[in-house]
Image 1 (cartoon, rainbow, N blue to C red):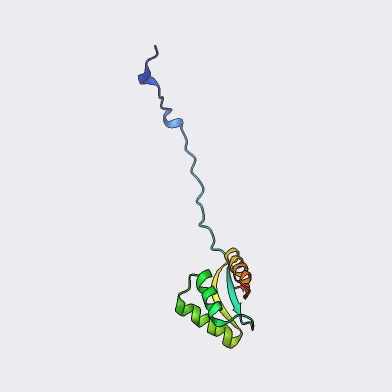
Image 2 (cartoon, rainbow, N blue to C red):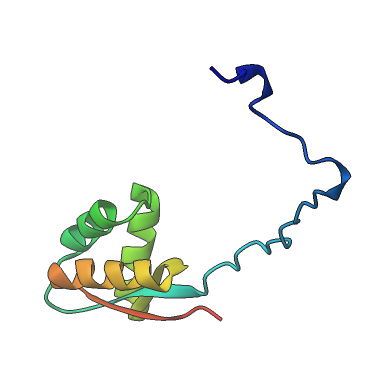
Length: 105
């Protein structure tokens, strides 16, 4: 039976270790605006409840944005990365609300 106390060998000074290149942190994703547009078919209560349901906004913030869209024609709901902005757009449109997205720049 072989002697198990000699199962590992050291190679000495000839061993070289490779260092990994420094990784750069990922760049933040470009931001996009989610814009709610006023329309003549949805009442304010429905618009506000939809904002509350679909976004993390508080009741007060949802009310302000709903009123802004009603008074000026458009309101900035939130700013996020493009994929999430597209998701918000689809969710609002599925409820019959008019939402567009555009680069935040």
